Length: 185
Image (cartoon, rainbow, N blue to C red; front, side, top):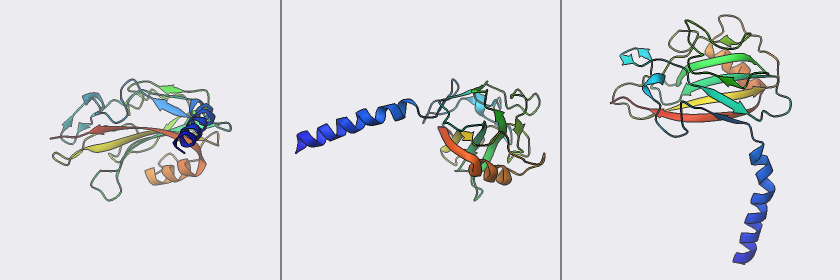
């Protein structure tokens, strides 16, 4: 019995490995899954003194049918009742597979031509770094790249984060997330 379970398990892994190899993936040179972010990704304001740099993100193996990408950065632990949107970027061309550190600056947008940043919960069209309340514990920051089924999302220039999220989720074929941590004592 144990031998047949082992055989079944090994066969299952063998058959599934090509799926894993071709999965849509995101990685970063600035963050590691499940680890604490650096001061570079901390907000510069609201009592925080970080560099407020959006992280490097690189993605690979988008699924067939992908026509553009979107990036979201979200903190579900923010004590707001609805979390906190740190960054939303839409209309990233299909030819792009990476954004460099600091590309989401509101002052000097370094994102690809055609991309559009949505106003974050700090009230800025750009990246806003981590700044959880002092003593609130560990917060989980979810940086997600979405593979979209459309060339671009038809959003007004002043689109809300909720509207952008609705349009992103309604057109996502696949997504990949890096979840990093941050806390202030």
